[in-house]
Image (cartoon, rainbow, N blue to C red; front, side):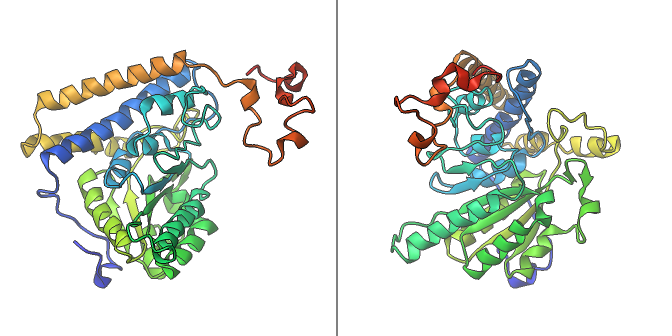
Length: 370
């Protein structure tokens, strides 16, 4: 499959026959189950008071994260949103590191200072989760420019790294989105813009928020392929992802992919989810991407029930271990509070005696104890 010029103005309809091998199928299934099980555990821990602030879960959208990220190399980069736990997991950040970050512990991937909405890993090229919508897109565009610069200016011939920017339908009415589409197309940057269109921007229906709800059409307006894909079908997502990633690696420029998906929980764990029509929620629940993949694997003799149950059991044990590890890990020291904040720490963050001011008990009077 290729995104030919004749395809730019049409959404793609894909055939899922023989799209995956047994090994790939089991790997994809395991990653999707990892994301779902992790998020379900997050809900439990949040309501038990182990996590604080806003926590946005990814349940229902696993086909998008897995469909794209499991096709990437370690050197490739990913930029996420506030709904970022599963993107980090798919990219290889350990469940222990992500759970510890959610617990605010020193062993978290950001040493407990990022929390739910700011997962980051230099090792795995996770450029971060971004709490404000659209903020990750310019960062991802910059990372893609870095890849192109290294290859074409610094003559690093083996630098074929690509970047994937994930964001939601609500972001697509923001200026950063359009500016970065223009820049990426103009400079033929190796980036894939992935819209996770879950139909709702918090409590605002996508259909009420934009003049043209077909987001994929905005790609051709900037001179790049625009593709619409069923984001509840990981096999269809993978087929589109393969071509988009391949185009970027070959130096053929960016692609805009709209994945129509659905979140199975409220906007965050603080959202009672009373605005969406129960019939709509039931419709998408019946199209659960994990259930659909399991059915496909079994019907095509790519996996057996015992194999899939073994994966489920292994993931359950992995998540239990992550919770235990996070719970037993230490909180960051007070001295960490002002690290990486001030360019000249002695001007404010560190006193004349060389100690961090936050180590003075008076510094945090009236605030929660760290």
